[in-house]
Length: 178
Image (tube, rainbow, N blue to C red; front, side, top):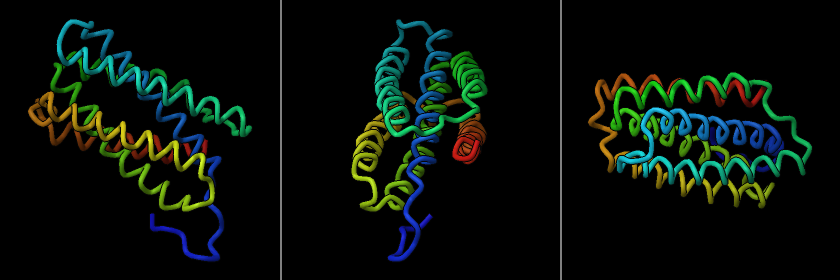
């Protein structure tokens, strides 16, 4: 999506907040699934636990903004609960590199998504824009950590990454509206 031009309608910050809160919720569930399978002893699991803590903080901030702005959360949260945990558990069961490939794929899409949101917001909502920019930087750190932990060496990496990225784009589209 391109940046707004003068005269365009303002950005729909409510839909942005709804999808961002849903995404952070999904991320916490993915990491919960991965840690349930991996435990907490390997270097990959310790890295995932650190990323999970940041995602929980992101979710808490978006939860508070949803309440204070009276934005309806997505009705798909029960689906993201199960789907996120299952995706995390399955990728971790394949192995630590597959778990990292999952993180790398999702964070690549989230970087793109947050960038589009920042372009669309412009100066309309400085609080939301600052939050998105802060979290985007941390999501890029997660992506880079996943790559450093062997994401690209995961079995069937191109297929797995493509499928997860497609699923992420679908979840974003659905959570904006439902």
